[in-house]
Every structure is written in structure tokens, then in C-alpha cells.
Image (cartoon, rainbow, N blue to C red; front, top):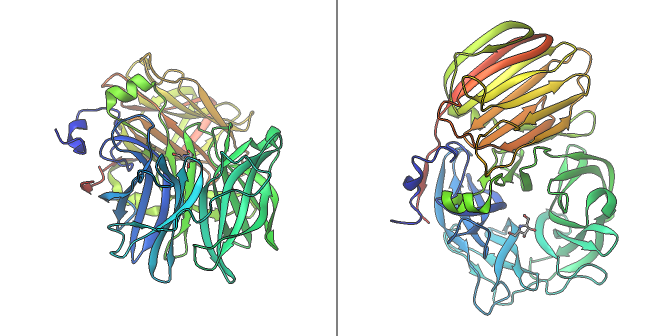
Length: 469
Ligand code: DQQ
């Protein structure tokens, strides 16, 4: 059987239908996100020969509309004897005077390399002079020096590279170049304290948003992604506030980019919540999140909403209005495990929420619950699966509603993926692995009084992913 033929997963109940994934095997970070001559190009960390992490290549997929995809040939593979002989790790893509250019980390040791394409990104040629940055600046942990993120300023290309300072914390290093080949170290862009923001910063992103700049990092050992909003003055970033990109426990190493309309879009890697053995048995691991649109909110924090294009997948629709619950539950006549649910809720004093992927008697269920007293939104997977080989537990994100603000939930259920967006500012991305074919119910519940002003449920269409690697 062709190992890249995804049809072999047709009966896999956990394989998502409207999130992007490679045809098979292992995927992690999004890389090189760029819109090029109208098309969105998404590269990704890829181990093409096994469904567990291994030697990293850059997979490549192209989309006209952010929704449907075509697999293109693997863009980068390690070159035996080259600076990326042990892997082509994460990086970014830019348009350098009409030449698409990838900047990535070669390992081991960790050095920065570039590659260009002369045929509209079909094939890639590594620069013969790689690496273009061979050593980190003194004082940082040299074995962790990776994930260049590049942008253009008036005085040339700039790159931020992630690393750490021993016993101090994660650090983002700033570089400048006229040509992407010759790089000058400008100093630390920003540094953190390990007690608060981890020891190594992976996959830094740095970009303007509104009248501020945003730094996003994925710190070791936090296993989640954080952001800072602040001022960028004379090659230094001064954070003014810090926030969480997603507290679901499965969202990591995102990459943000500006599309041709000027929107700041972002994809993240949704890692698995099951064992290595289960991944091997499945034959695939890792899912790309839905694309998010980032904005700067009036309170200075990051706003995050799913890209409107995802709405093109909406199929059969049902709406409920004015559902009033008083310490009770109501099952909806809407079933499925590929759904979008949008709900506007007026909570009372007690917890209120929605159960998805629910079996008729609730043996399996995933609970999205808002607790007004705790001012927190939780995705509770304690009973998401009767399987033994899966993660359980709950993840919570703070969410304080203003006095007249309803709870606005958008829940995307895609088999083993549940992505929750709340009020444009709090996100929980989860992985679940229900075992029962009848774990497809949707149920509203409330402890005490609550009003579900509207609940919309759409059946989501399967995305088309064509092409072959
Ligand atoms: N994944 C890549 C690294 C990056 C890490 C390797 C983050 O470049 O730091 O696959 O998930």
C-alpha cells in the first residue's frame, strides 16, 4: 500500500476531517507560513517514515482558501554530511526580492540555514554557503539555538531566534541582515526569568499588531505557548503585559504570518494525548489547529478567533433559542463528531456548559464548562474516553466576563480534536479519543439557572486534501 495514501485511514474514528494533517506519519510545528501570489503555503515539521518523532523534514501543503489543501513534495530533507544532516528544524519563509526563501535550523549542532526556490516553491535549493549563522552569541545555551522567525524592516531583514541563558531563563535573540546570508547580532530582543516563563524559548514569533508589537514563545518546560504585548524600541522589546495563547494543553509552537489582506493568521501544532503505542497503531500523529486571526484587543491583550474561511465548511444547520435551564440538562437533536457549535449563554451563579462527544448515558463525554464563581472556562476530559491509553483530566483558562457580557462559545469538534474559543480571547485546544460509536451527542447543562440565548450547530464538511508527497 502507498504509505502516503490517506485512504487507509478511512475507518479511523479519531482522524480529523476538517483539520489539516499530512497523509500519514508524524507532524509537529507549522513552519514557513506565507501567502505567495494568492496561495497559502503551510510547511510543517514532518517525520515521513513513522508516526512518532524522528528526523525532521519540512512537509509542504498549499491552499487557495485556508480550508482545502493540496500536498506538495517534501520541501526540505536533511542533506547527508550537511549542516542539517540530523534534521531540518523549524523556521520561517519570506519573499526576498521575488525569491521565496526559507530560513530554518539545521541540526546538530543547531545552526541557521536558508533555501530558495526558483520554480514557485515546488523545489528548493539549499544555499551552498550554509549555515548562514553558524554559532550563537556568547552567553546562551549553544545546544538550544533555533527556530528563526524573519520579518522586514526599513533597515533590512530581521530575525529572532530562540535560546536560553543557563540558570536565568528563555531568551529571544535579534539579528539583522541585508540579504538573508550575512547576519549581524543586534543583542537580546527580550529575556525571561525561568521561574515565570521557562528555561528555553522555542519558536519565537515577533510582529507588529495594532500600535504594539507581540512576541510569542513556546517555552521549555511549560509545554504551552505564551505571548507578550509591548513596545519595540531601538532593537529591544519591552513587554507591557503577558498572556496565554491556549491553555488546553495541546497547542504548541504556533506560527503567525501576515497574509496579503494584512491579517495576522496563526496555526499551531495540536499534539496527541495518547501513548506512543497508540500513535504507532494509528499510523499518524499530530494535527494542525484551525487558522486563527489575531487582533489586539482594547484591553491590550491578544484577540483570537477562528479564520472566517472555516465557516465555508458549515453544512446542515440547526438553531435553538431561549433555552432556559434550571439545574438540568437538555440533549440536542444534533449529533456528530464533526461539528461547529456556537452558543451565546447568560450564565447564572452556577456552572454552565455544553457536553460534546457524549454517549447516550454519558459514559463518554467531554464537558466544556464555565464557572462564573471561579471565572474560569474548563474543558473536562475526565470521561472523554473509556480507553486506557489516553490522557484524561481537565484544562482551564481564566475568563472574566464583564457585567453584561454573555458567554460566547465556539466549539469545533473534529473527532479527536476539540477547539474551544470563548469571547474572542480565551482558547482551549484539546485532544480526545472516544471509543464508542454512539459518543456523538450534544447536551446543554446548567447548575442553577442559565439561559442559552442561541445555540447553533453545524455539521462540518470534510476538507479536500489532494496531491501526493
Ligand atoms: N520543534 C522543532 C524545533 C522546535 C520544536 C523540532 C518545537 O525546531 O524548537 O521539530 O516543537
